[in-house]
Length: 110
Length: 114
Image (spheres, rainbow over the protein chains, first blue to last red):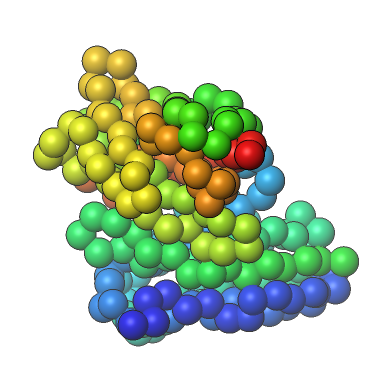
């Protein structure tokens, strides 16, 4: 049972480059989320989706974009990477009550 | 709007001592409350959850938490700390209105001293 799978696990980007963080879940959950985790700040919500074709901004959406073409996949796009986007990114999906998290992507922008 | 405050970004306890991690929430409607644990370089794992049933909730690894509406608290406890409990712990809140999203506290890093 894979749960929530994120790729890649690590990535170094140069300023101005773009990339897509992949997230897939196999639990048929409608709700999916992207968070970023910075030291001492907890997890901040970037974007969320309540089902295929429906996405909305969270607390810190600037510099990111998402899409949700299927129930399973919820990719996060960084168009013009900036040093402020250096962080650990977590994808999650939620059933009736609890959320399940992926293992995270550690992104460094230099 | 809902929010979570975790008192103490770092807590140290001796092995075998009581663990107490504090969490206070703010919500205008009855909340769901969660404790998650994060081991180094890993994702978040659910420890326990409160979803408006019993106010004393038991979770994995001997942890439990009590929902106290009058104090707007959901503190996490464990009677006897083990070395393997060293990790970061996050309290989170969700309400069944609006965007229905999960909001996290800033986390508490637990150190267990041998």
